[in-house]
Amino acid sequence: MMRKFLLALLLWVSFLLQTTIFKNLSFTNVAPNLLLIVTVSCAYMRGRKEGMVVGFFAGLLIDLFYGAFFGYYALLYVLIGFAVGSFWDVFFDKDIKMPLLLVGITDFALNLIIYATRFLVRGRLRFDLYMIEIILPEIVFTMILTLIVYRIVYAINHRFEDRSKEGRHSLWAKE
Amino acid sequence: MLVILIIVCIGLMAATLVSDFVADPVRTAAGYVITPFQNGINRIGKFVDQQLKGFRDSKELAAENEALQKRIGELMEENNQIILDEQELERLRRLYDLDRSYLEYTKIPAEVISRDPGSWYSTFVINRGTADGIEEGMNVLADGGLAGIVTKTGQSWAEVRAIIHDESSVSAMVVPTQENCIVSGNLQRMESGLIDFSGLRDDDGLVKEGAAIVTSAISSEYLPGLLIGYVAEVRSDPNRLTKSGTLTPAVSFRYLREVLVIREKKQTKD
Image (cartoon, rainbow over all chains, first blue to last red):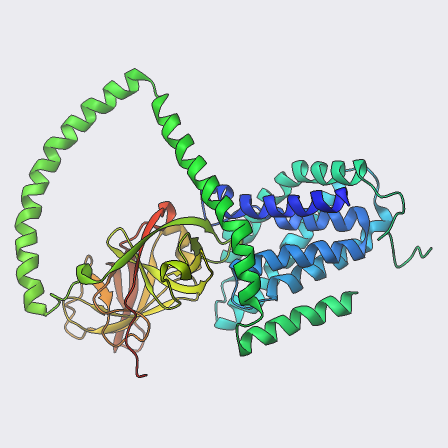
């Protein structure tokens, strides 16, 4: 219960930071995607089910205040939670390399989908420019912050881990 | 689980296309948990800004003072020129029948409290909502120019789509010739701070760098005569009939803090 409450708090703080301080700090329009880091970290540590739930609420937060279609970001983040949750099997405690890689890949995929569904369809064809000016800087920023945020999520999960291991379902390792 | 959540998400999207009934109550509730804190963070940010300013080196300040004194001299000169220009502007305004300037609209002041969490869009949230009389479709001003339009509202907040937003387009008019054109945001130019205009008829080549662009009377969303910006570059289109180019917005979006929301909405057919 405590763990769930802390995760919800973390999501909420991430959203607040991402929409205020980080947007003012950033030199361009680009800001690190904290909500993505939390989603990926949770999914990687706890599996698909929890990844999807955390992703759903992360996306919903963005949808509530921003975005044209209500449910668009929720859907994207659920899919990310599901995909990353599949790597729960190789989850190895404190190793930071795997979550870094996963954050990098999912951030790229997320931005690629946003580009394809919202920009490409309106005839904005210069993908190279968007890649250099938006996607790459965001991935770099986000990966750097993963080093910090992943440890926070890890600490929350480790300290307040439910003994029942609920939510630990994996495709390959059925109980 | 995956299937259920996907169906929920798609259901939500479909529902919002039809009406706003699903999102509205949730938004109102979320507004109470999010916006007060965004307000607070911004206030802290401002406070820290001011404190940091107090810590600056005195030598630095002396040097700056000298530079500023020199600048005052230059500005005084410039000011005289501007007073002359203003009289000319007044005369020209009357000439162009633009005297119904936007000073006469009633406006609600608001503060920018948060910005789009993603990197692709230029939308921001202000700390006034339906409780203060703000409605969707109201125009938003800043620095004496057009900043954007209200696209979503909550009890105590409203989302504004900036004119530099990649999906924004404004029906506009070039002041010297009164010809219409379309001003649209473009993410590719975000770095340079410029936005695009297109479809301008200018057979005699009268539109030059620095010409003012204002919202046109035929716009369906924006009130007429609001300053958008100044032409930065004009070029002929391949079709040789119209011209397009870039303009510098009157609003500096990077440092946007305070805005004014115009209470009047553009009159449409119904």
